[in-house]
Image 1 (spheres, rainbow, N blue to C red):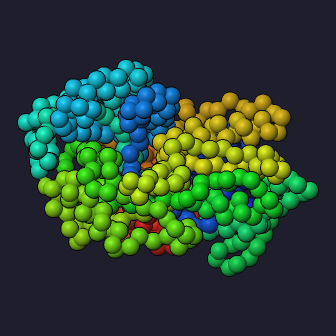
Image 2 (tube, rainbow, N blue to C red):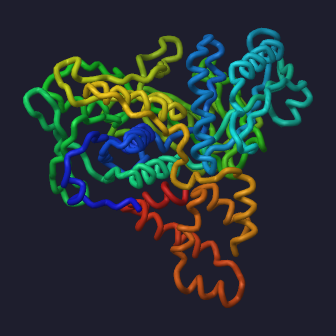
Image 3 (cartoon, one colour):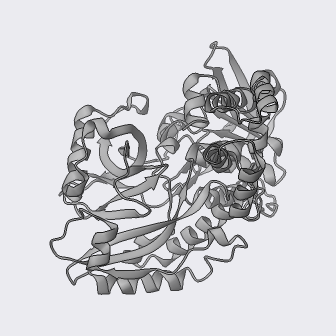
Length: 507
């Protein structure tokens, strides 16, 4: 159980204090806790509610890095994709992707066939997983006719075929963060949402903790730690701005990022990479199947101001819709067919002069503020959801070195997250469907969201629902299950508001 107890939180000094409860903060807290360090984490809103909630849900194996021959980043991404499928088997699943091929140049079928072969060779160890459901097949090309069958309405002028490869998708990115935090809590970490850092505590030039404020009542309190780790994402500059003096440059700009969820699927079974013919230049739009709908990304724009003032305008949404319809005329996507708009902020390194689009930061950065006279604090600029665990592992190694200590061995790549105790996903799912007195659809959703922990959610079914089930042998209705999930969110995972429940549990 994750308990928000601010009195208990302040009772001790910690080895590590993490600022920010997104995907990077969650992985750092889990990584450090697994290694036996005492950990506290505070988040100014709800866990995973900002940029991490805007994930396109794709866990990339780095196929796009082939164009720059960046094999090192490919190998990192391939390893982390496999690791995530192993430690969170209920949340991370293989995803088939098709890219239409045009002409006979670098976007042609022959060139993509070579790229697929290279991708398979570089990811030679991708299937070193015991669970067959997690195996990723080899890529291959298909004919023009087959591509049109799979992607009806795709632009046909110059179409030569399609390239099919496999990546992975996270079923619920918010639940991955909660699973990590729940795991960190089980390993001894103290966590609190709706706690804002207002100042840094010093002993001489060394940072020894933070002053924080409870967002619910304005009460202030101090938290002390050997090392403070700033994983606050778009608010990173605000936190480093609390330093008495710093030369840390940080990302010079922030980029707005938008993904859309549609009311209907644009394609069945396959994610699709569509060449963008709009302002996005040579980038691809990505359309992925997601829970019977499509999630489409990504639109980017420069964010001019304070991250607290981030909001996407209706004009920007309409601009993105125009890009989608231009890239895929068969979409005929209208504003009323947009079920949800996901928005977030990412670090960027300037603006492309030709397209006026932000140049996204490509490489993560770990910055030790001891470099500018402030030992005791490190900041992380994160750029990819997929490799957050790897960055957390490197960061904790570096923290231990800063103490003059040998870092305990990392075990996060082999340790299932909370709910991830599943050896064979399909076998587990079918067993749950056969065992539970629930509809197959409801059982499947519970397993995909909570994994092996789903019985704990069902334990919150109210007495009336349990009594009805026992007397009639009929499954509880969907409302009763949702009520159980709400109770679980409030009592087990620190949900404080209705939106916390909707995004964390029911999204």
